[in-house]
Image 1 (cartoon, helix red, strand yellow):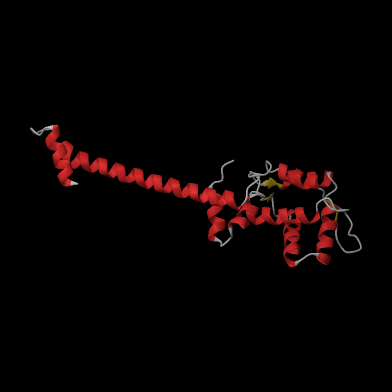
Image 2 (tube, rainbow, N blue to C red):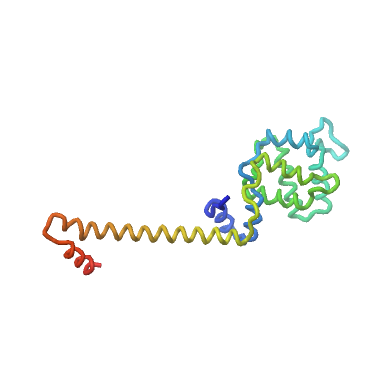
Length: 203
């Protein structure tokens, strides 16, 4: 799929991200958001997250591989990794939310971070688990993109803008020639040669 420079790249570019950072962010987004009504049953069925009626010894009512990940990152994770896990865990366990916006780099990029950090480790979600979540959002929107892909999309947009400007200039010139030279000669005695000479002199 061709990258939409204005919709996808420019907002991240304006936020100061490098092409490599933009590629990583866009490489994590899905085609659409994930409905929590679909996500929560999937998490439960895959043993990723279940809600218990009674709290455990830590006071939590949640269990599963996501809860294991949440507990682990609190001990060994960096601040950025802790934030990434907390963002996802709090988002999907908040009753006021109805979707998980994996089509937004703000949520997709941290999700990719925890995928890379925890997938397939003992007691943690598997790569297949993370892929199943993304599948609810239609799967990854962009695959195999890098900094060069982002730079190419920027250049393609610049070329399109330049071509549009060129065509506008030509259209404006055509309108000027018709209005100033050709149309006035239609009701007179000027020949084509006269009009050509007038155009050369007038331009």
